[in-house]
Length: 133
Image (tube, rainbow, N blue to C red):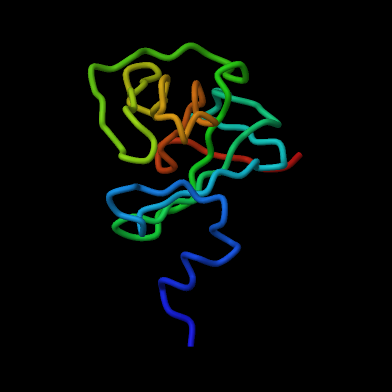
């Protein structure tokens, strides 16, 4: 019989980044392996073939999040006076476009999450994602 502990110890989570204070809070970072474009309305915010997909399990199983390298952004964002802390990612800073908060960035993530450094994530209910060509 498979238990939740055996699932978390399975090969699927071998490369997972875990919260030292809570080993059932974890994330897996994988390349998206396809082109990703992100829009707000008709405005192209990002166009990349180097996106990362983050799968996280914490208080629940969260929807996957796409992170886009800063170099692949197609417009400028304003910084907001807002930040949050995640024990497995670090401190997030929030961004807006034309006055609306659209996403966040980890400019200095914790050591184990360095792959996310200078990658932007966007609220899925505020933008449109197109994956593939």
